[in-house]
Length: 176
Image: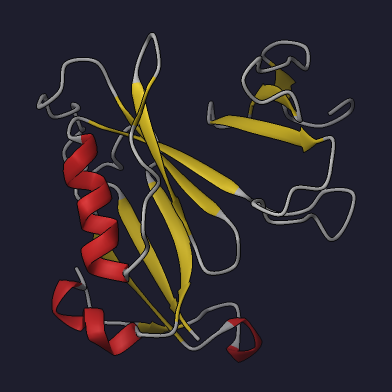
């Protein structure tokens, strides 16, 4: 991170219940918060990095309704979530995607309260995530706007469209 626009929020740490994770928090030039994690041992249950800086293996979002959010991912995409884990300060579940990546859904304090959102702005927290989608047309009734050709080119998939998740998060679907 040295000589980059990112600032460390703290030194790399450890997670007692996950000793194979070494997380590092950073803040980007736009004030966005990022979590970088070194997975210190091969894990059959986690997506493997293919280079020094691999890829996103987990995106964490908060929801005022944890059960509703994991039900949304199950019914919309057919992904089975883990059982809900109740930790001392919050509850969470993970949804494993077909490529081994995961979406972690954390229930924020005050279940049922919607998070404030600036009119026309992005939702707080995990504002948008992009997923490859092999069942693109099946979700057409949920698109918030007509699909467009992928501006990155055909080698990165076909069309792109966005739907809104249970907690207000934007989910960009990339047709594959």
